[in-house]
Image (tube, rainbow, N blue to C red; front, side, top):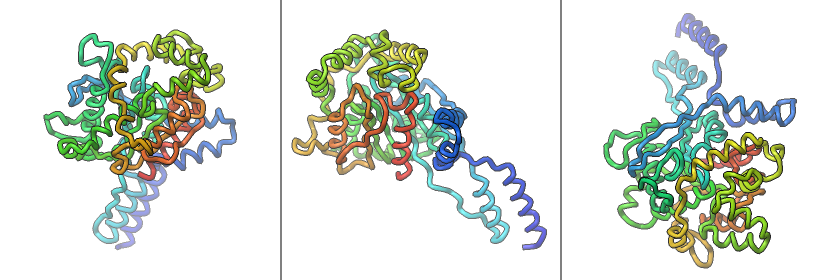
Length: 402
């Protein structure tokens, strides 16, 4: 190589380096920037919020392969090659006449599924921008009966679990880029032809995922061949309704506290969580005042308006009671029959969960083949409020190993 080539290369490297803005920041860099702050914890939270606010989720109405016209929210980090990769490729080209293969391990897409009274918006406030800022594509859809996803049956007030499972299956298959016009049609999110997916569900969304896994690994050859359409790299359940449903938990709550059992009953069955601020706070956000978990009265009013919008139709509990995942669990161990076929799994519970108790979380962990769940400092709505990052960090530790 001539001296002029070296000078040209060094000049380009100097210019590129002077304008380098690492994208996306690694989780270590973000943690370091927060922990190195000399200010208060509020300053650290503000710094993190500034980081994630750069990534704005996009909401679309997309018809799933199941026929449901669903609300889909995505937060996809832009594709960009780092300056270091470009310099390495440039140097190799100058020295050896060809570039290096700078393709790095692609991060999995995170697919989120919400629970009752919620919709995909609950992931879009904090989790989706946060993980997108770390380079993870994030997607979520709203189940039938919510404000963004009407029921297939016009005017229906109840939705069967089978309908939710069919929509989830179609949604996951649609994450792959494809030109097919069949039921596996792509949602057009440009995640690649066979993207790795980590599926994460909260509350009732977790039980829906259990039913979907039951179908996926039921031994039916038709489903086995369809499994190839979804590159499932991991599964996570957060504050999930356990495989046995709410029945056993309700009895435990009645024995422990009639007052708490009453709040849960009127909060969900009579939908008092939509109109009563105290019940709303207790059920989802850790109770107390706005200082307890960073949820202001204005936030409560906003969330209650969402809850009202997203309970147009609710799960058909009488139908679900006949099809609970626990029916297929091993009677001695509580494990699901498909545990040995699962990808890596995590189960997270919340220390201040008013809705799903410790026994319920432990039951879910056993069902998914784990010795015990991970408990984080949080109320039931683990993805909202001041402590949202506790659950997010637990997820990050998991997906970094996938």
